[in-house]
Amino acid sequence: MNYDLTNKTIIITGANSGIGKAATLQLAKLGATVIMVCRNLESGSKVLEEIRSVVSNSKVELMRVDMSEQKSVREFAQSFLEKHQRLDVLIHNAANFDRSQTKPIFTSDGVETVFATNHVNIFLMTQLLLDRLKASAPSRVITIASKGLITYPFLDIEFDNLNGQKNFSLQHAYYHAKQAQVMFTFYLAEQLKNSNITVNCVRVGNVAVPNSRLNHLPKWMLKLYEMKRKFSFTPEKMAETYVWLAADPNLQNVTGKYWDAPQVAVKANKNAYNQETQKKTLGCNEIIN
Image (cartoon, rainbow, N blue to C red; front, side):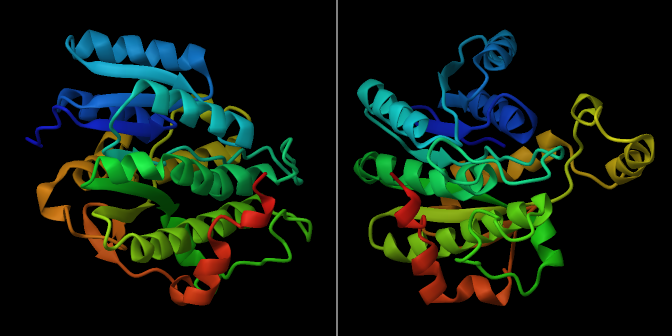
């Protein structure tokens, strides 16, 4: 990748591990000013030092946000806007999928944490930063969904079950929120089509994760993950799609697309294109304080 991102400012959430960490390094190598956003500043600081040791002249900054909490998102946005006059790319990489969760867990805003982190507060952050994106246009918003949605071909938004109050399942809650992200992408792209801001979604497939994140699993499941790893993308390979969407000049006018790695446009499930549901899903405004 030979893109020149000098003078470009890019926010990436969940930047302290996995794909987010890999994308941050790749963007830094291309000369971008990268705002690493993560909840754990200790972990983020270690990654920041790693990147600086590899890219000596890197322009990387660490900021904190807890994507499950609306107050934290608002505080981050205010702090960013005070410090930075540009925002060229906003990458919503952070996600919540805690395999140990067996029942709804509510944030201080009264929103179930999976839906809050993976959809509601992504909408909120985008809205808070939208004017800066417009002022910096041409600019880009990149959201993240999951290839696992393939296993839910008829999934729709359950407006009477946003908080998972009916027979909670972590997997269903996660894909429910990711389906909302896909709808949000399509709707926002249409709303911003004349503003020189593109909005695209990446469908992340199987990505190898470190064993340290799997320690709580039983041995039989660990063996399954070992088998799965053979068919998985590395975080670095998956990050290339993020960087391509963030930087490729040929994509300046490409918006409202759903992308699989490596750089292939695919179709979402049928319900994702329902414009009325998209509009109703636009952040579920009634649960934003």
